[in-house]
Image 1 (tube, rainbow, N blue to C red):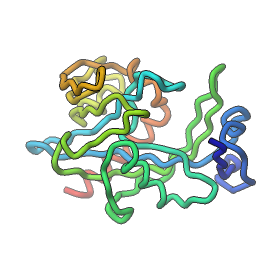
Image 2: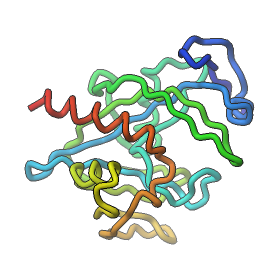
Image 3: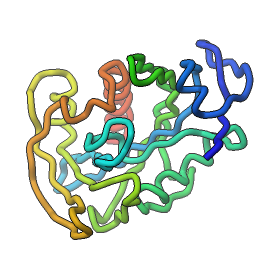
Image 4: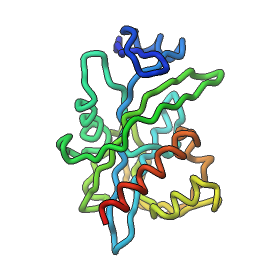
Length: 208
């Protein structure tokens, strides 16, 4: 697929349009859409994590943002809501999302040069796991974790957290509860998490 993305300088000023494969090969700054789904269950917040497909080129079988994707050159940030419908089967209006602003972050190693301006949003779900219908080409499963525990893990206060959800194996949905650590979340750089978490905590405090 010959996707084209807007590219930017480090100050988020647009400088042109490039093919997606060149954007990652050369380390150009570009826009992405991130949406974290949260839900209040028995007075406790939970956060949903997707399990990336074991067949993905980048970060296979790793836990990641609930739904995320690139903003194409012909799209606006508002168009990013398609990722929720495509990846996890949750249909929302853009007005239902709460913005956490833009988080710039980068991953630069021998495999990838990924420089992203992440436009980050939160959506409050009701209905639990059965509200999800995952895109099997992209995801193997969907799980949730206690948000307080997730924050402690991201801040290195604990080494593991419990997640519960389901994944597909041989086209069969398997529900499970398991322990994961940061090593199972390598798609999420610490620099990103350390920006994301205080912003999420702030909007949750304001909502109470």
